[in-house]
Image: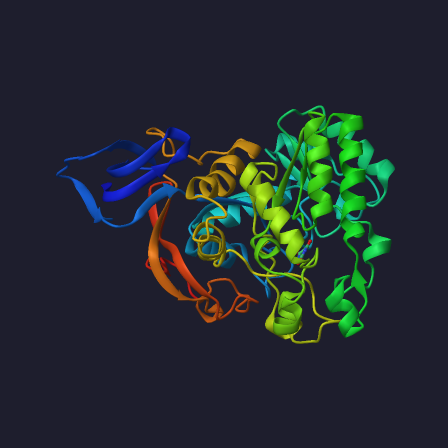
Length: 433
Ligand code: DOR
């Protein structure tokens, strides 16, 4: 049966589409978009007053399986994704064991297909077993279809090894190294950003330089090798300056920023404690402003959540013991609409660019536009939907967030992946909360 999305505001900046129209889906594809589509054999869904956009694509997500199923599974994480309007994710490899071989990649792909919520693109490790001692078998991972490689959660600390790895990746023009840029001796033991709040609390902290030194090193190694480099979760104004330096020289360096680094500061630790403990740490208002502006201008390419679920009991173990991470898949779109779009800091077209089209482009993925013939990966938004973030309603196993209780205006009300309705009015079909 075909599906006809009727009367929504169809919005696709890539194709300069913005107006009331019908969108017809046949099997897994968009068949047509037109002001009025007449069909007698289609399921009609009335979307008057709603927005129809390309589905969101999140290139930085921790699904935790295999090894940490108490925190998240591929099924629960991908259910959380479609609950949030997200139709594809790239899964970070800090699992146990980490995916440093084709069989481990297949495991993730099979689990994701069996769960059947959104598409999952496994990210392979840069180093063997993600231990930073020697390179992973990059050629066999590439053969298995992997195009993004990372040791995220940690950098490849040994610069000589990272250079060798980048040299090898440079042979594959469509492969990208995703850098978790961090100078470990500077960040070791730090619980939050080094600044006014850490000084007030007298706690060990992570200076901005722990990131900027890492970013500088990673950019210089990318320049030396010609490899494509993508900088994960930038948090400081200094990193943005270094990114601009790389771009001015035409280096193939791209970057992402998370919703929490855009919207929260180190002050959040005072309110939310360990729920706001994250790596890199939340920084200052100046950093937020610079990150927001860099995103708007396209210097920072994409938004990615760094969805990093942990058990509540782990987060309740105190600031020192608690692991770093915020579950972001189900809050990203409402928070970005509320905190950036509604305040005029990012247009809706920018949001589609940084959280759909550009992510698709970076990894050469389907999606990112509503082109007839393309896969029907669609997010429907209600810009009038108002509420408060309620982690108890998350499909993620991590039912906590520093954003709990925050008011939002605007959010996803339907997610369609490959022509199938996966989420409607907050309910994910086939998933349990
Ligand atoms: O806060 C974080 N959590 N940052 C990372 O780099 C890793 C992630 C995790 O895996 O928990």
